[in-house]
Length: 131
Image (cartoon, rainbow, N blue to C red; front, top):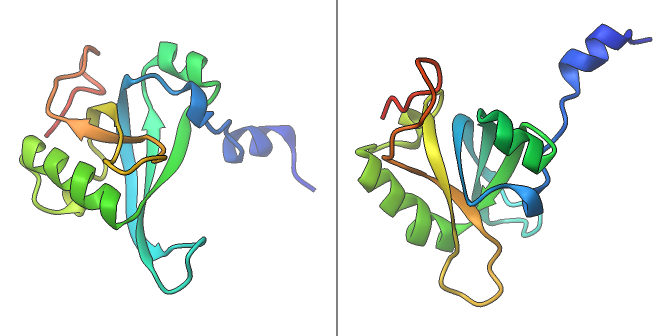
């Protein structure tokens, strides 16, 4: 069986995508390319993001989320954001804090994605953008 302390450490509340603010300070925990779970045979990037701003955590009702980026999201949103941040490889995003901003791909019906900006975070010390 699992005790409460372990459950508390291992099961953190996931942020509700519909409640995540348009801009917030966050840390990119991982970026992984793997098969799209909805479209077998197609690749997608999965980004695990931790929200670091306490007000944004409260608003989103959780402190982390995973977003999937298909080709159009990568080309229209992520690549320009990486250029803006001076980053040349997704590996360089991992472990760093950014102000993440809600963006939409150009096709109708696209759900938002949050991409890093080169804006500096407002926190002191920990959480500052290291891009």
